[in-house]
Amino acid sequence: MTTSMAATHAASKRLKDAIFGASAACAEAAKKYGADKVTNATMGVMMDDEGKLASIPTMERVFRSLSVEDYVRYAPIPGLPDYLDAVIDLTFADQKPEGYTAAIATAGGTGAIHHAVANYAERGDKVLTSDWFWGTYSVICNECGCQLTNYALFDENNKFNIADYTAKVDEIMKTQDSLLVIINTPAHNPTGFSLTEEDWDKVLDLTKKYAAQGKKMSILVDIAYIDYAGEKNETRKFMKKFGNLPANIFVMFAFSMSKGYTAYGQRTGALVAVSSSEEVITEFKEINKYTSRATWSNINRGAMTLLAKISADKETLAQFEKERDAFYQMIQERGMLFMKEAKECGLNALPYKGGFFLSVPAKDPQAVCDKLHDDLIFAVPLKMGVRIAACSVSAAKMKGIAAKVLKALKAVEG
Image 1 (cartoon, rainbow, N blue to C red):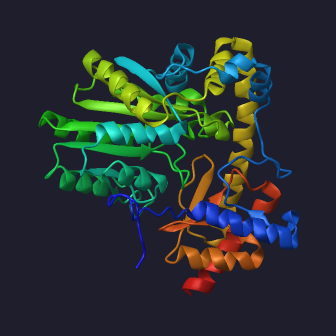
Image 2 (image 1 turned 60 degrees about the horizontal axis):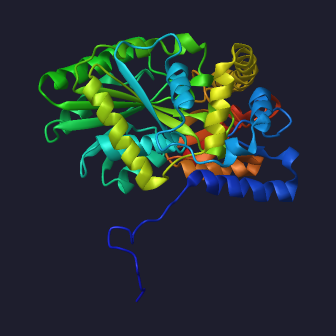
Image 3 (image 1 turned 45 degrees about the horizontal axis):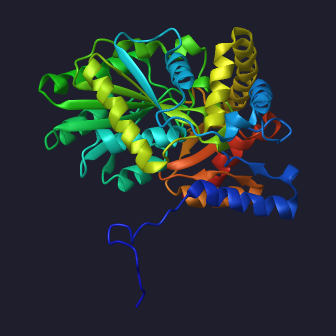
């Protein structure tokens, strides 16, 4: 008989993280065979072609120039005003939709997702996202007393599956008066897929249909990887569509400094919102400030100051964006090399547009990943397939991986 002192709602909590498990196995192999012999495709951080952690030079220079006071003083609960203004500008670039906007500082993009679920999904309700998804969405929903449910992201042509998305929304709205949908685009984690503008039109048509019936519809767009998806205004064109929507349609964005600023460990992000209703935006600021106080109180002042300083100086910002674009091109080349070789060898890889990751469907992802260990390749087993981190695998090591994934698939699945 085991003894538990936890509250009944907490006693069954167990965190199983496939990413960290795969990374640990890779570290063991590197000790045994040498890092140069091992391909680490598990990591969600950017590594240069020498296998070192990559950071954007201007980010590092500005961060090191901050005063001790910038690092150690408390920040306001909602975030530094200059930071919040800059985050709104960075989220939308030149594609800002008409309406009222606001932002609240969060502990990384994860914190932004937490606040959106905590405050815009009814307890006990379903939250909808795609079947290929970042597993932490489910953890957050469970923690907030909600249930994550899924639609099929891809149709038979590997396009956005609007039919299944519509079917799932229709099913949920038979029993719910409100719905929060999480859409990770552009450069979706874990597939690298992006919704087109036409896809967004169809999503919004369905959203408007239920809003017209008096239902509350909220969309959270997870844009953690947007800075590795292409030209900034091109990748944000869809955002204009969120202007002048009915007041009972609410759109939020999960902004993160982790990838776009290579500041993963600083845990700094923001939840950004747009609405046609000033009242809804005022409410957004109040309730999220309350939730921040109840979780982390206030976040990393130094990282907020860093972003604000880079954004305030045009020359610094231009240099920063130039350096980041070089990293984007590096990752893009790796991803496209994998996709080219996948096509050549007949591997069914999911459509990759950009971002840190790409994925291959598999019936038994864990077995496929285990088989890849024979070639000293370490990838992440997901529920529906295998995730390869283009962000952390050099072009030299990426060469030949697609064929080896296919070989492992055939060995496991026949």
